[in-house]
Amino acid sequence: MNERLLLRPVRDDDGPQLVALIGAAYDEYPGCVLDLPDLDDDLPTPATTAARRGGRWWVLEDDGAVVASVGTGALDDDCRVELKRLYVADSHRRRGLASLLVERVRAHAAGVGATHVVLWSDTRFVDAHRLYERHGFVDTGRRRDLHDPSDTTEIQFEQPVDAPAEARRAWSWDGPFGVEHVRWVDLPDGAVFFGEITDTGEERLGGPLVYSVEVDADWRTRRVLVAGPTGVRVLSSDGAGRWWRDGRPAEELEGCLDVDIEATPLTNTLPIRRAGAGPVTAAWVRVPDPAVEPLHQAYEADGDGRWTYRSAGGFVGGLTVDDQGLVIDYLQQHDDGSTTPIWTRVARDHR
Image 1 (cartoon, rainbow, N blue to C red):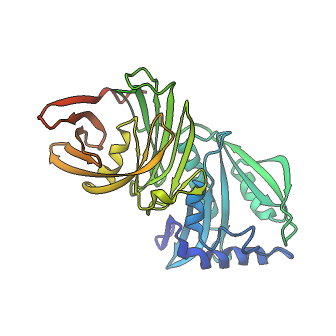
Image 2 (image 1 turned 30 degrees about the vertical axis):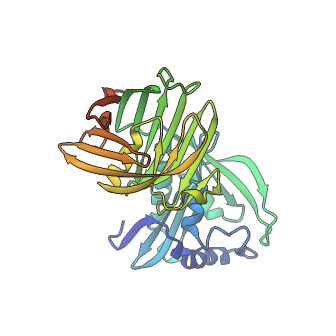
Image 3 (image 1 turned 90 degrees about the vertical axis):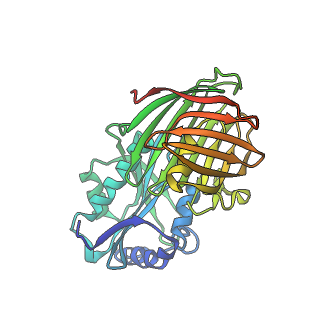
């Protein structure tokens, strides 16, 4: 890639340039027009839209100008990720940039555990169809009419994900809710953690609990899924303090930069990696209680991988972490100086 080009996450202030980029692409096809503020309502505030939907969106910038775009949806219930908004300015075509952006989506999809990447494309975009087919996408035969001002009919294309992304690390903890197995998978610009708790502990969950936590390259929480006997909770964030729960604004979580899932010490790693120390506010996911609420916390580095953790209500914990910020031991500290073990890592780097 040309050294002048910068691939980065989309920002809301990219909206006008995206409107111009995609509007110019539509102008190449008679009768194809932007539908603002309806069908194309994601363009004015693209970062907010992607965060609310639990997806990602990137742009290619050339000397300050947005010259290409691609995004994804969230992993759906059928383990698919949708490729969205792939456009390249006419001035930058035939340089392999569209292929670069397709590869970004495929790598992201493999990381979050997708089995397929799907996309919908206007029947008139025949050049794009050839690109997709060169990359192994096939026409599924499905069509949909959008009933928009452009009278759009779209074709669905699909491609299997060859293999899931390999875990960087995998380990287990033994704690009050049972034995927990966790995998850390790298994404193109972040990471995702997959955890499963078998519910054999003293504080019963009522059944197994599984979760995933996706963070961006700055270790800011972007998407959380917690599934257990009391149901499924899906949270998404823009990484700057705004949250959505099941796609609806979660105003009560305004200002939270991290998630804290009550049943695991994994989420202690996030503020340690993201901020290092100091006060933070986390979206506290209670289990098995379905509540999600803000929780004020503070982390203080004590040296040699040891941290003191405090949360609202007077809880004090002592954490020992490895060089990646992952908990080795987690103790509750009492006023009389005694401690009670809570979590202990019992297996490391297994597959």
